[in-house]
Length: 404
Image 1 (cartoon, rainbow, N blue to C red):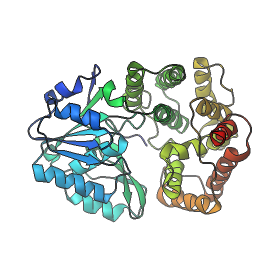
Image 2 (image 1 turned 120 degrees about the vertical axis):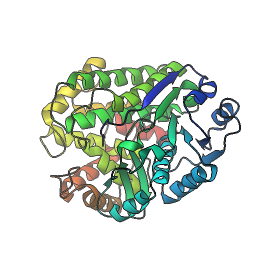
Image 3 (image 1 turned 120 degrees about the horizontal axis):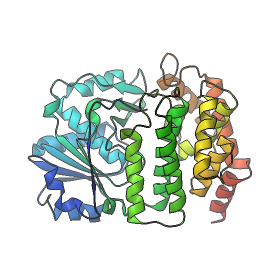
């Protein structure tokens, strides 16, 4: 989902290693640090700089749940924080964003608990005193989510994974420093590029054409070119560019005026990941090819065939070696980038995913409106089958991993 842009984030791009001695310019009052516990080097650098003496909370990079929010909220209240610096991937930044907002308005916790059973999307009501929310300075150590600038966050609840939306969830400041991306594996870098690519492509295909189409095509081409370049070389500069492109999928012009629920693959992949315990992009890699095949075959409920073909034509300009068939081409691109889906989607997982997708995002809700259980199960069946028996890129990647 994409959200409104009424809450503007100040974006700061720094030379490698500058953040520790610049972060003080971006905070106000009592400041604390919430950091992924795997980022010891980056944490120590910050605490040796402007954040010297700042209280610090370390988190595991796991999906955010209610216990996570209680932990971060208690940290904010205990130290009376006026600013919170969040350093890590999407889950750490989501934890900071949600906890900061819920601390300012505790009634939002009750609101989420009441509405979690109704839909996969929870749009928070207006916040009575938004200025009481601690200032959030978000520093991504990964690429893809764009959580540092987006107005949404994911929360695991007792009834499933929920998408929380509020204009007050966007970070006050987003800081990109290549040193914070240094520990990101190449595999996760490619997954992040794919996530950013599909955020734009999926939303465009699920929306109507508009005057900003060329901006979308340009952004997609830039992501593909960058990904292909990273297959040959890796550098701090390229990683910083990847992070900037990820941010641009939220802050640029490409998705202006689009259907905020246009990227249908996200909702199915979200439920598949939750049911199977797979990583989000593994689940996404499983379903995107079959969904694009359905669109190419004229299934309008998944997206517009003409827009998909037009979009893929723009991608082919950036990489003419890709298959002109969008479904085959996206599988080919994922193979080149070393990304594969689930090897098997069992019958139980298939049924549970279909049921959860319709319950949380379908029926009268706009996300999967027009799709039924048979259509979703068909996509999931093809997703599991492709990983097992299809020749070509996806099958070759799986075989190579098994040999390895």
